Image (cartoon, rainbow, N blue to C red; front, side, top):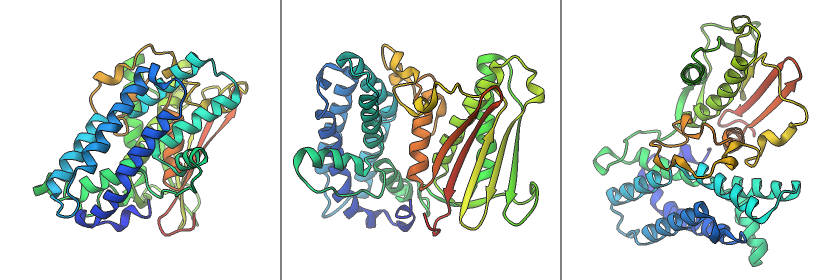
Length: 358
């Protein structure tokens, strides 16, 4: 995240693109190949084929005399073809686990870590491959998708880009407005499914002041789409749980509190929907716990739109919470949940301001 904001010119990114992106696709290809039996899983075969094609396309680009329009076209094609990577990968890994009969907690933890590393090309990917190949790890500081998206965003409109001076980051991202937008989207989804929607309250709190501050919204530099995804996932869960309880929903609004000081932004989502059973525990953070695993085919192939920008595309796959935590970590923050049996659940999202200590 801190590295992304330093790029303002697409041409300046070309050396990093040449060095990093093909290598990361190659690492993902190798990571799939480390899984026993992957060739028998259609979703993993499709991911392998996609990555192989993307790698081939990128290494054939002219990096000495770069045509930025060609780069933008290639990256847009990659992002379009890969918009269902999360659902595709999660479903494939779930099917692989069932096929191989790997149901122990240790094996589940390994597959969860595999997906974490695969989806963001984090340093864990290198650790797995380097352990197998006898190499020293090379930590990665920035997600592959963020790197590609930043290039497209800062490229000029003449080259097919978006022509945004700050790229995918917003130096004055209004966290409160994003929370309200996420609440509206989640509320609409609930209305479509249940015919009703829960009440919610969004409030701002600022360090040094007592009580909510109605005219003091929280601004900070951030990638807005990541925060939108995280908040949509948290609110979707809280709203749905609230509607499924039998108590009058008008007396139990979901509270969204946006708190901030000079170093961090903390968002608290609290509901009174009865809480999460203790026996479920940390399973909510597992890709294997969700319903993606119970789907016979990844029917999101026919769904349009990017998974991150369109929270509805992941509905029913059960990968929302682990992905939300993954993006919080990528932003340098953390996401946690606390359940109070018979009462409700609180979600705590803490994000650092750029320039603040991690």
